Length: 250
Figure 1 (cartoon, one colour):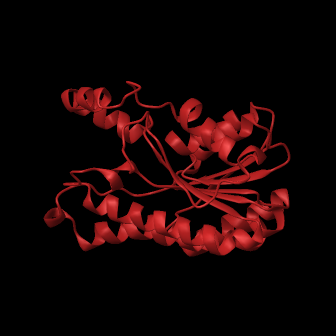
Figure 2 (tube, helix red, strand yellow):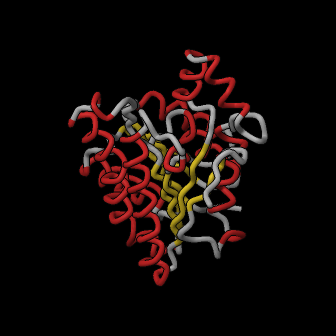
């Protein structure tokens, strides 16, 4: 159980972020959800409160360091503590390398590795006080044998994986656990791709041993909640695939 704990989730207005938020709330955590569209975060906050806990919705662009600090400050003001930080928000540029602009790459970098790096550092003093945990979002695209058209996305997610490992190594002495997940989930982006590419989507699902794409709350969120609990107190520095058995990490 996570009763009395406080979680802060970026990109919590929809998809995987919302699924994680709801799963954490179901285990008793109060949840702060942030995102660029406040209305989506507010809608998530309503669902979170329906689970019997407190929620706070905040507008934030993770590429803006001041927004990150503001979210953290408001979280501490509202709840007095931070136990769980989930770095989920991420811009995605997909396409051949020759088609990707510097601006697109910069957006992926600033919303992914740089935002993760900044937010973990800002949150460190508070997580140290609570023996807290960090969950970073990576992707199994890092492990694809054919990374064509996914190069930029794979590059920034691989950077987040290394930041995860470094933080786990350096902050273990402070009682802070840091892990990452590589999820397949029915996020709006993936659902949109599947709807637009039914033939490729069918092959994609058939390549998953369990035969389906995970649910944002029941499959991804529930596992993250377990990772944040005392039952997983010895888990740190790991990147775990939540993909129905598709990727071979090796």
